[in-house]
Length: 120
Image (tube, rainbow, N blue to C red; front, side):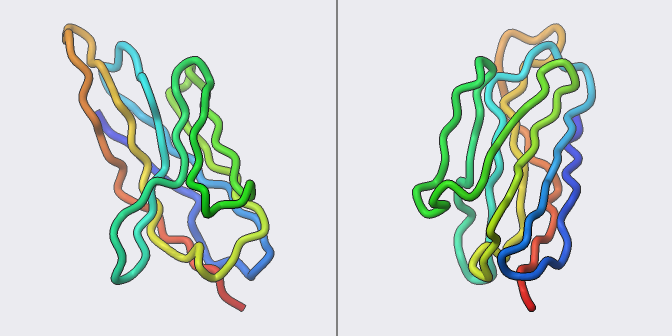
C-alpha cells in the first residue's frame, strides 16, 4: 500500500491551497483518513480527519479555515486550506486506516509528507 501526498508549495499569507492524497494497493476498505502536520521543532499534530460515512473532526486552532473531503471510490482525501497563516507552515502528512484485501484487520499507513510554506 502507498499513500502519495501532493500539492504543497510556497503560498502567500491569506492565500489558498489544496492538498490531495491518494492511496493505492490491494485495498479492501479505508476507515478513516486524515491530515497531520509537523512544524519545525514541534510535534506532529492532527489537522483534520474524515470517516467513511463522512463525519469529520478538526483541530480547534484552525478556526474553520480548512475543509477535509474524501472520495471513497478513488481512495483519496483532500484538504482545502483557506486564509493561510504563517503558523500553518509545516510538513503535511496524510494517514489512512486501511484493511487490505484478504486481511481481517485495519492498519494505519502514512504518506511521505508535502511541504507547505506560508510566507510573503
